[in-house]
Image 1 (cartoon, helix red, strand yellow):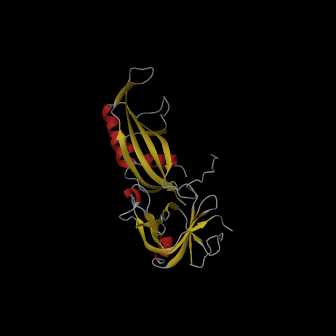
Image 2 (tube, rainbow over the protein chains, first blue to last red):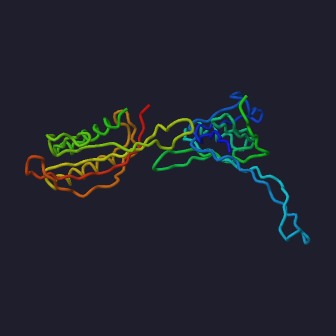
Image 3 (cartoon, each protein chain N blue to C red):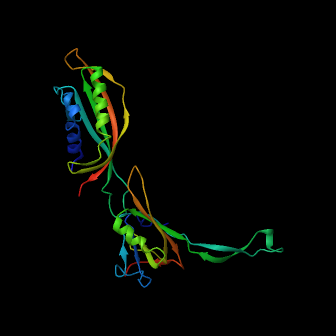
Length: 145
Length: 136
């Protein structure tokens, strides 16, 4: 098998914008957040609909794909009081969000922030945690324009 | 910003340690250095909570303190003073913002001999961990 070019897990740029922001636009319409330490991207999952019945061959259950639950996301960044206040004010508002990887591809989604809160660590730093609910299908970003 | 400069300033700035006549030196000091002697060595620097774009400005580091004195009691007293001074240090010192310095272990006291003499020298090491960053 041909070797792939691996993409490092660091250097991911997380941004948010209005629901009119174009996912492939390089910067226009997007606000990037600084000092992100961790991103948990949405993990969409399709429901399963059981289709097996009394006469199903081999008495092995069969399924069809059902609705997709688009999932949730979480971003953690170093706490800064002004950034925290700005993000806190976005709670509940429909927005576009995206994470762009080092190779220029990424993932985008529409949804809303379900919560913004600080987390403390006596051994380290105060961080801001942002939690999201995804609404609708994820957008696969092949490359920025 | 130099943690070494800050650490030296912290130790040399303590009146009780100074009253003991302690000399503060990096690494192991020199052979003819006056005792009691407090030496320091910094190692294991690591960036705390690395961000996606860059290393975090906040760092952790290990401080190894060496305590050398002519008597058993003196080494104990040196150790107690350093153990009092370092964990109490919080704030900005010589351009370094220190979040905490935490004691991380202490060796037994060992007895050696000053090279070229029969004079006993008593030695103990202490280890500390510190969280800090440069003042902007």
